[in-house]
Image 1 (cartoon, rainbow, N blue to C red):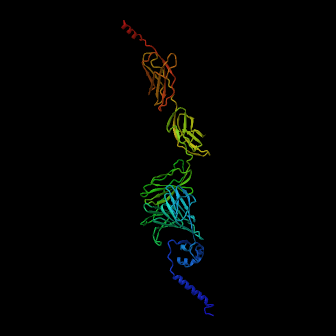
Image 2 (image 1 turned 60 degrees about the vertical axis):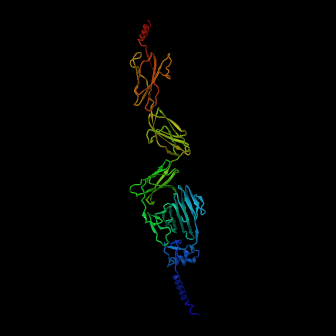
Image 3 (image 1 turned 30 degrees about the vertical axis):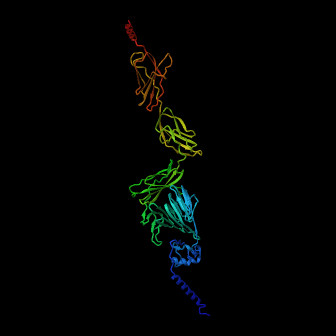
Length: 564
């Protein structure tokens, strides 16, 4: 029997193990590749179990031990990051789902064709999502991470993989133009997530950050809203140190490199109460760019739906924005100050509601500020295709808090009301067939003046039948009134013919002076014209006689003497 049998076998085994360990220790560890999978160790993990779940060959745990310099393969520290060569893994190619499509959005395939994107469209590796000037969309990945793509952007999904047995994913996206906003899964297992542009690479694990790239200036930006992001120049060596961006900081990059991080501008002040918008287009106001903001600062204003879809975006120095004809519903305004290099700062939000439909009809008459005469007023408007009926309120105060008339169920385009003299205010609302009432129109006002009173001339001064001047006088009206007179002759006892008057005269005073009337019987009437030009009714007709002159024989006698 050999001397190595029996008790000698454990010694041989120990020597063999030591030799194997020495060989393993002497073997140089392979260089870590830039695209190695980064795995975050979870509680209870050990190398053998990780290999069984994730590697194509479970015996590869020894290679993981050497690659990551693991001294205790069965006692791994939770939270530690292991690098695993992609060639060893059991990975599946994944894809992203397009959601919340607004406006023109398309997916450009690997063959260059561009197809319209809709909610539920898949974005596969090497495909590009393109949004128009008024388009936006959201990408959702298998691990729950999401990316909102702003208008005017081009974003290519370079890599999307899910590791079988771990639920961990990694996504790499290339931003060629525009702006994206990422929400990376925070709960373990956290994914490896990168957004690359031609000048800047941003890598995050469980955070919220933004990235943008302008191809015209070849400049990129990155900003962190929550968590931490590693920023590196695109094309930098894998082991080159990056720049750590923490919550509230941003960075700019060009082809020359990555600048130092700077703090984001603070959130603007917005009113805290909810706002209701009842007029289209939707126009919202906010604070002006003040002296406290840096030079070149502007606003980035975005309107989001209750589901957080990006519906509209405006940028500029103006303190308001026109967001078009948003549908009735609830929304959120998100406002950020943008510094001189284009970094958008902390956000301020304002909840608002659009309640603008059915829109009120156009008011046509009486015109705003019009003066009407009489005791009745006809209010009219243009019909609205969205209205089945109308509701009208008329009152003596501009706020119409206590309207004198509140008429509902009107199906015509006008209403005539009896009203007292004075200033009146009115507005109108459209009502749909289902009974829903839209917003009120703007309040419009008019004045209702009484009819000018009938005017009756007084008896002629000096008495009828004299040879002197006849003078008539009316009762004085209001300041600004004018007076019209008509004179006609009685012919053979018939009624005077005012259709063909002997005299028509307008006077700024309530007086009429007549001279050299032939003998006969005359009729006189008058009316008042108010300051707006409205003439009242003719007053009662007065009559007077002009007698033949007592010196009528003098001309005849003179003529007779001349003939003798």
